[in-house]
Amino acid sequence: GLDLGNKSCGIAVSDEIGLVHPRENYLFPKCAFKVCLSHVLDFLHKEGIVEVALGLPLNMDGTESDSTLRSYRFKASLEEADPSLKVTLVNETLTTVEADERINLNKSSKKKRDSIIDMEAAVVILESYLHERSGNYND
Image (cartoon, rainbow, N blue to C red; front, side):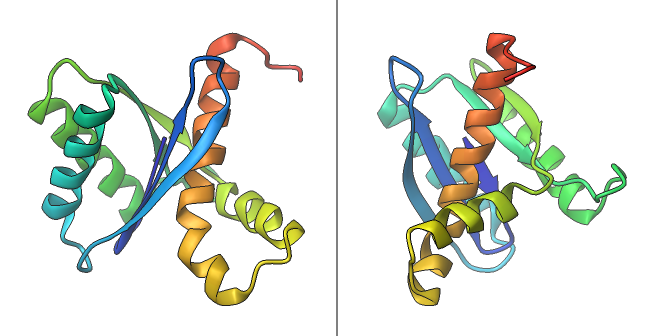
């Protein structure tokens, strides 16, 4: 699971039984998406990951924004760099809100929150993808 921002990329992975774990909040220079792409590809290859759920940020009314286009371009770049990857875009509306609520339940400090929010959002994105893929729409 990936939550791509302008300066960071949250990364989460699932294990063999489908539990999702936060792995990394990768920081990169603002809008240096090629740097992020290289790091993500290295991570995927080292971990043997062949399927990616990439967050697709949409406005609350479902319309697209500059951030949406960023995700489309990143998806295309991932697939071009490694055609064997299966990259699925996942609507990430309100994932940061849910991630923030999860972090607040753990009473994390603002500094700690800021360092893990994208990673936790990647967890929510991946959980959403796995849930949808399994067909459990009513849970």
